[in-house]
Image (cartoon, rainbow, N blue to C red; front, side, top):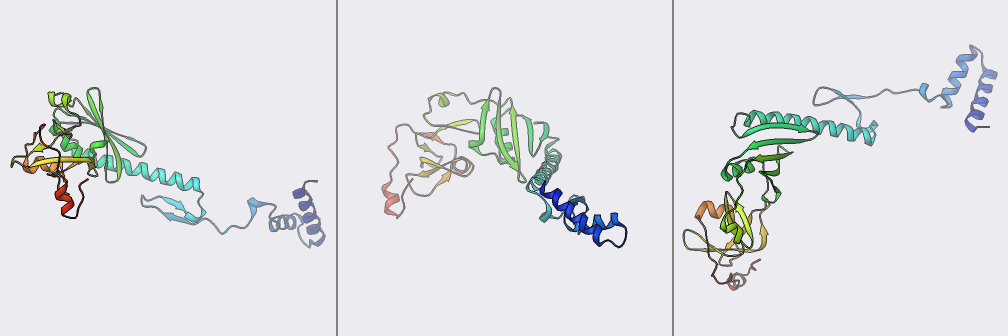
Length: 252
C-alpha cells in the first residue's frame, strides 16, 4: 500500500475514534495537522513590498531563483525604455538622428553620419571605445553605454578612410578622418617625435605614445588636439629607451 495512503488511513481512523463532534471536520483537521492536505495547511500570509515603479512584489526571501531572474530582467528592460526615452529627448532633434529602438535590455540607435568628425563626437557621447567599432558596408557599428545601459549605434554613410596613407600604413589607426601609422614616429608642431610603444592603449582603445622613448604616455587624440598636426617620419631612428631606464622607469 502507498505510504501516504497508509498514513492517511491511520489518521482518519484515529480521528473518527476520538471525534466528539462533526466527523468530517475532525477528519479534515487531522489531515491538515498531519500535513497530508498541503493546500489547507496554515499560512502566515505573503508579505508584499512596494516596488520603485509603484507595483507590488513578494518578500525576497520567498522568491525562487527563477522569479528573481524574471524580476531582474523586467527591471533591466524597464530601465532600457527609460534611458531610450531620455536619449531621444536629448538627440531627437539632431539632423544625424534617424531612429531609436529598444530590444529587451538593450538600445539600438541609427544615425546618418557624413563626416568622420561627426562620428567622433557621437562616439564620445555614447562612450564607444575605439576597439568596439566594427566597419560594415556603407556604415560603422559601435557598442557603447548611456547611464549604464548598453547602446548599439549604427552610423550610416560614414565616409570610409581610403587614403594613400591608409593603404601603405603598417599599423594604421583612423582618428577623425585621418590615418596614423603607429609603426613609425610622428613629429608634432613643435618638432618633438612621438613613438607608439608596442601595444599600450587607453581604456577606450586609444593608442598611447611617448616623446623620444620617455616613460610618460599621452593618448594620440590629446597629442593631435594639443600639439598637432602630426607628420609621420618614416626615416627616423628607433625610439631610444636608455633615458627611460636612467630615470628609474622602463619604456613599454
